[in-house]
Image: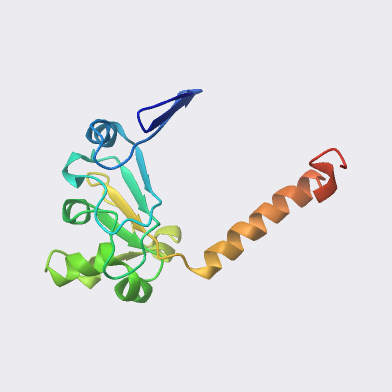
Amino acid sequence: MEHGGGELRFEADGLMVEACAPGQAAVEEAIRAADLVACCTTARTPLFDGSALAAHATVTAVGSHEPDAREVDDATVRRSTVVVEARAAALREAGDVIQPLRAGLLEADDLVGMADVVRGKAVADPARPRLFKSVGMAWEDLVVAGAAYEAVAGSGEREGDRDGGR
């Protein structure tokens, strides 16, 4: 693991993870090479230039969830298949979706519901990046908590077992 100059990089077993702050010279290079770009911030303005995304890339924008805040730019939205948890929630809360809609760069019907992707009713175009825009719905937290509980309960590990019973 390397850390220096505001950059964090980790590589193991063929997986390389790199954290970059907006405005760093390494951001565009990292975006061009990335398979997955995870935006998990409270940013008010886009974090990177979406024209640098590779066609195979997936972007998850899960931080900003207000109509006047966004983590991704218009280029990311225009180029991508945009997947949302629920269209109504995205149209109400997701600045990453609302602002391009207002600018005429995206239509509400262009939004793909996550349920349709999971059920196989919608398939992302492999020639375009994919953007998953989350507004943080409570049911997702419940699913993750349930899966974590089942993983721990299924392993036989209990609360006191994790720290040696201390």
